[in-house]
View 1 (tube, rainbow, N blue to C red):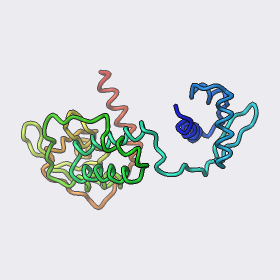
View 2: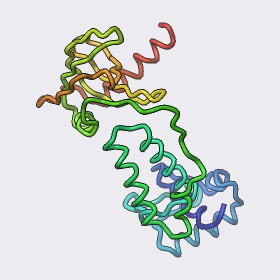
View 3: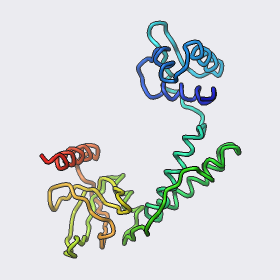
View 4: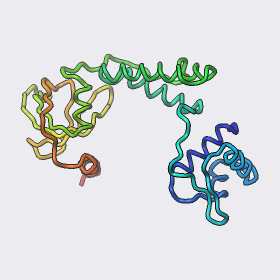
Length: 231
């Protein structure tokens, strides 16, 4: 690991926790000697990074500190490029366009020598069949999820039976090139997974659902764990 990357990594480790981290813990995680760590800390102090250290306690990064933007390692850029390429091939049209815009903005903002990592990435997703077509605006659905709006769905099941559902949208799941709306269904009083390609009509209602989304997500995780464990 180059020193510049190592300095960034030290900051990232310290940012990830509010508890002090000892020099030995940092050195072990970075797989370097204590003397090398002390030199790195001296360099960070010289750069006016607000890290405080106390003997026998450890190092702490000031809560108010934020790293300068767009200081990425090649692996971080590779991860961003791969993720954006996957979204561009798998998501709805508006999110796909946003993924392509993200790559363009990222490549224009990083140093010239790193642009090939983004524009000619060594990892790429492979699309084996056409993505699903939906009858609603994906951006509208994502907005409803973020803002906790209730939805009215006209939905056709695998037998073609059409039902009218009132749901609380939680997130969009991607599985084997199929997109699912994971939601709490008021009609069935249970969690349901709706294939988005079978949604014939989607209407965002004016009312927000009363529960916290984090609580519903936790309930869904517990419900899914029970079902797969056979309990």
